[in-house]
Length: 495
Ligand code: ATP
Image (cartoon, rainbow, N blue to C red):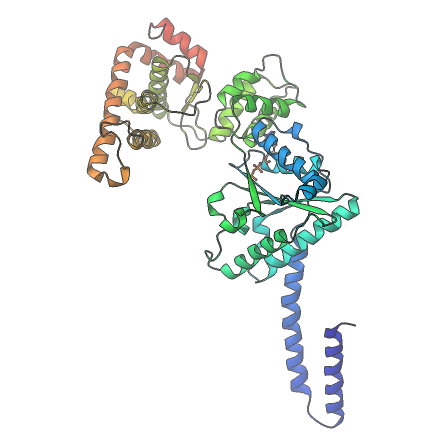
């Protein structure tokens, strides 16, 4: 019998006795009932919420490190940390502080969850996953209770699975572990984070189940410094966007179980997908398979994969069709970008199209060549020149620009600002913050108008080719990079 039951029984007995003595007990019964209903609602909400959330996604994970493409550095660092965790006896002998938490830091979709699952299967640990947002409720104390319950569950599950390792994965750690005192309902946030710190501090080498916490975030700057202190998440593993080799490996992994036609060239796809995360690449292979299915084919061809790149980058093709005059203007604009791009950097265009997708009316897809991590002045100037070439072509053929160039011009301003802040403009090395706004503005517009003249000169020199390219685009709607180069070569614009 619990204290609650004894108290309830005694109160009822007193009321019954008072009624027997002739007192009016109805008001007491009424208020007592009301209080009970209130208490029941609040406690059940808390308990109910606790049970619904934090359902572990799996027990022992079957994802291994081989299922993760690229990310060699992250995998090695993680494996090293896990080996250390597995070597409990040596750690104890040398009196080393055990590793309790590892933080996976990187952009969305780069495989952090996969890495956590692989870490669990590598250590034969039960795997419990939760997201930072699942801990936060409007009811004070619920988050802390969920944290306690998560650690308790991890230990219970490990025991029932017959292993002495448990891995708790907390995605979106910045929601639960943001800097304390910063939230409007900060008491609840703070209590939850404090509880996580308490649980992590309580983990020792002598526990019969070794619990390790893996956090994932793409905003490490938002985390409370207490979380990153030694003894908590003291190992940070960076999970970056994959490089070309990594993208190739991920594409290979995600096409393993898909029937590919002989013309499929994953290397060229890896080259054309600079900036794609693993999740984007997985989506790309999936979209290509859907396109093949829609066409009633039993294999995926290169053209499906190439179109899927556009779909993942720009969104679904739009049903809305521009008017013939608009279409011609779009063709002029895109032809300008494509022509100048090929003249400045031969081989740089993968495709040019005037089919509208997402928010773009038409677009040129560039092949970035090898992954680049540094931008020189020449490179930034070339980029600006290509960006303004669309509106330069419109002005050349129509005498005026259009609103379609707005996003190009924003991107051009960004690049020009980069030139200034990296000390590559005529202002030399400056602190952008203290440059008078008028001077900054003049410098940026100066850089851009110089590149506009450059683009215009290239288009003037190739005006016949430009007209021809516009006609081809209006007729065919899109042109692959090598077809574009054939056309420009036949017109003597490129060699
Ligand atoms: P988020 O930060 O948004 O939670 P994440 O970094 O945890 O993302 P995952 O959930 O691990 O990313 O990846 C999503 C999907 O993308 C995976 O299920 C997988 O299909 C694919 N993926 C991502 N990275 C890789 C990779 N390196 N190798 C193979 N597949 C990958």
